[in-house]
Amino acid sequence: MSANEFGHQLGNALMEANMTQMTFGFEAHVSREAVSAYKNGRAVAPPDVKSKSILLTDNAFLAMAAAHESTAGTSPVILDGDNVDLNRHTAVAKTVEEVEELLDAIKKAQAILIKPPKSLTTQERQQLEKLIQETLDVITSTTNMAAVICREVKLSWVYQWTHHKAKLAKRGFLKIVTGGGGVK
Image (tube, rainbow, N blue to C red; front, side, top):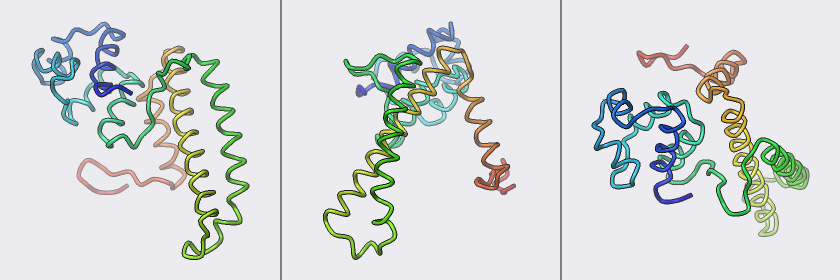
């Protein structure tokens, strides 16, 4: 990902949404000049502008760029290298490959995971690092796959995440924090 991936993706998202910098600025409560500065990397968009940009454009790749920039690079990257052809067919094929590799790594690590962490050998720690790396590969490939499918099929990225969180809450896996700071 480039140093100004959010700005690059903001430009793409505005173009895809047929939204001008002025219109976006009005909706996000920033000047057109500020929008230009975010797009060109002369300024870093504050968190509220990043959130608003995602809601206004409903663009998965913009959301990924905002998350990556806002988490010191500890979230999935947009796969954009020379060896990537991001379309739903290749994204699904790559995800299947990555999931199979993760399942293999999980099977190899199961016996290690029941041991107390203090008793792990160097080789076992390396095996667990491989498990983590395979997990991150799956997170990255599945996120890119979902983003590509949303873009190509014109599904709402924001809706998909809202629906997903509602499902998790319904199953008791997630507490929903209300606007007043309470928990449902």
